[in-house]
Length: 328
Image (cartoon, rainbow, N blue to C red; front, top):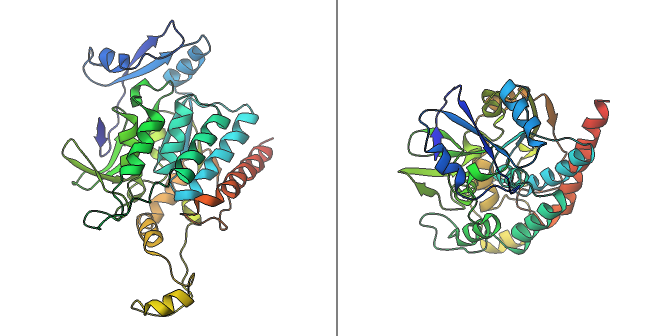
């Protein structure tokens, strides 16, 4: 289920108590179907969860928002480690593109070590963009990306995640921003990370859904509209630039391309950046909505340099430690 466009609401609150200390798959949708209108549900698996519910209901919740940015988004993993070491806990998670994927692991309750191992396996060994095809719809078939997300998140629905979670996609069917809060998690993440021209769009409910970075790469405004009083945001978008080492207006012969490698942006890199270049003014406004803004220095990591994941993780860790130290 997606909510396209902007909407403000004051929902009723549905408390779901799980005696087995684990959310039963599918139970949330069944309970929500019993109510009409806007309903915000909360999972209580342990006594400590009641404190989170109290913060959310009273408008004192702490939200975490993670931006998109290709391989640079793996910096989120380092940031999560630093936040966990500092005892920081969050009541709701949101994100766009790879930020949504990393954030989903947090909302699922996976620890940092477990989630980092899964991410490395998915993005590095899984070679998500290696199933190239005749570019009628996109450069890749999207089969590897879809299979990896399904294998990673299984039958999890967004509403069954222990923590409230949303991810942003972009509708090319006229609605613009789509905030996804319900339905299969893998499908929502696949839509949120569908870089136009690189991955095929997700077709669902009559909508053509692509990467959320096109409309909202750092959805702090969505988190704030949900009533979260404190928003921590990790933004990597401003660091993404492409440089040219030659002056030209057409592709040169292949022999020249071979001898001048690195002086021109590649096709995939250009498509990734093109999908993120719009809305810079709005991006600055969304940054300003964050009560804690973390911006790792990632000039040394390209948007598709998955093999540099360790450097990205370390950059995220260092930047977060620096911000936390400054708050003392």
